[in-house]
Image 1 (cartoon, one colour):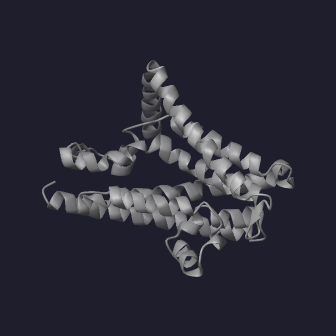
Image 2 (cartoon, one colour; image 1 turned 120 degrees about the vertical axis):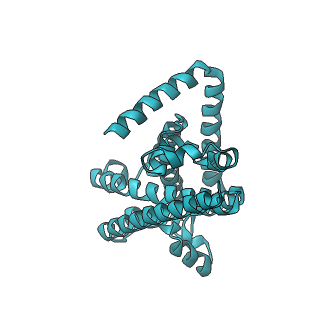
Length: 260
C-alpha cells in the first residue's frame, strides 16, 4: 500500500511537470499517435483486395497489433526508466538501488513515469475495437472478460523479456544491441506466427514470445481452449518474473563484485 501511494504521488508530480511544457508534451503525444496510426494503415493496405493472409483476416491482424500496443502500456508509463539502467551503472547513480530497502525492480518503477503509456493503452484498445468491427466479438461481454484476464499475463511476459534484455548491461556494460534484438523479436510477435517458417515459429514459442500475442489471439479469435490458454499464460508470466528476479539478483551481485 505504501508503495502504491508513493507511486501515485510520483505519477501526479511527473504528469504535472510535463504539462508545464505543453508544446513538448503535445509533440511527443502526436508522435506516438502518428506512428501508431501509420502502423495500422500499413497493415490495412498491405493486405490488398483479398483482406486476409494465411487465414487471418485484416481485422484480426489489426486486433493483434492493438493487443500488443495495449500490453506495452504499463512498460511505457510505469517502467519508462528501465532504459536508463545502463547510464546509471556507468555514472554511479545505480548505487542508490543497491543501498535502498526494497526490491530494485519496484524502486525502478518509482524512478520515472510517462503519460504516453495512456496513449499506448487507448490506441491499442482503439485498434482492437476497429479490428473487431462488424464481428460478434464486439458486443460479446464474455469475450472482453477473457481479453481483460489475458492482458496482464501477456504484459508481464513482455515486460520481463524487455527487462531481461536491459539487465544484460550488468555483464556486457552495454545493452543497446540486446534491446534492439529483443525489440525486433517482440515486434515480429504481434503478427500471426503462421507467417514464419516452422523453425522460427518454434523459436518464438520457446522464448516464449508466442505468449505475448499469438496464443491469446488463438484463444480469443480461433478455437483454442481459452481457459487452458489462460492457465498456460499465467504459468509463463510467473516463470518470466521468476527468471527476471534471479537474473537481476545475479546481475547486481556481478556488478557489486566488480566494484561497480
